[in-house]
Image 1: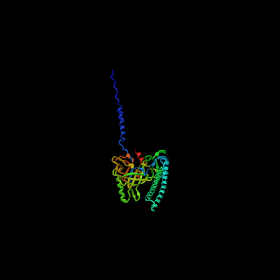
Image 2: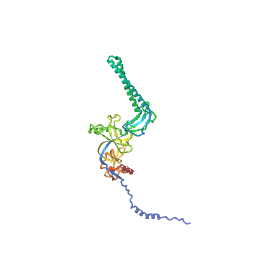
Image 3: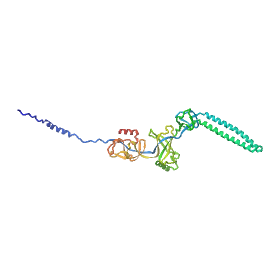
Image 4: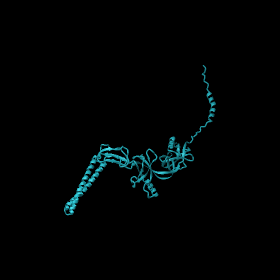
Length: 404
């Protein structure tokens, strides 16, 4: 029997690996695996601006009409006519309602007739008194008769006075049948229709008349602001009235309505309460707005601002001033192109800019665009923008959208 044949060992793979190994090793030695960091993020910076600004005190309030009159029936009767269109503008003394006059016209005629009767009685009484006095002076008549005739004459005079008063009263009731506008303004709808009985018992409310020009806003000024304003007024001129900035010149005030941010209505202070409310530590101040176009309506919620002083201040875009639990801050790029956090104290808005009372200077490079890419302590590529004062609110809003 032949012995089993064993397969010959395969040596081609080790030989092939030995041949290929130097070539692969040589190829790897020409490539580098070192990490290349990304470039610093790009941000846009701008210098805060310095300019003259006006400082304001801002408050909120509601518009109120100077005069609001409830038109009521002053005499009882059936409502005969309604002579206006609801919501229309009416002038002073315009005829608005008419109550049935017939009963009151008859009362006037009766009172006038009674007056004429009393006047005739007075003539007879005066003649009798004159005769009685002549007879008594000649001792041809009794003294008692003279006294009686004089008393009748005086009684007739008193009756005429009472009759004249009754005529005046009935004429006044007849006049009250016509309800006229006591002032110029706009009237509400009529609360009672023609044909209804009004004025029976309590005076019936017929409509309400609202004076549309001017309009007023009353606000409660805080005690601290009050003391600041009073101290400035006393230093300027102690003879000035509260609320005045010069003799005969009241402090101006600007008004903004709910759907617009700008203060487009202008008026002035016209009354300051002489008493401070001890419970709230505030004082009531009333502001007047002429409202020539009648745009302002009673009840509108508004914002007011009172100019107090003018001075130089540092301003920065309001969108570049951030906030956290510690307060307001700004991101500033230093001379090493690193982002630093500056805590700031801010004031009022001036357009799209906000007053920065501390924390920034005009030489700082303030990050205005790319805020989300600027991390405190990290390096950035800072690109200078136009001066901050030229940035419009729309541009700042677009820049925020790009950051996101």
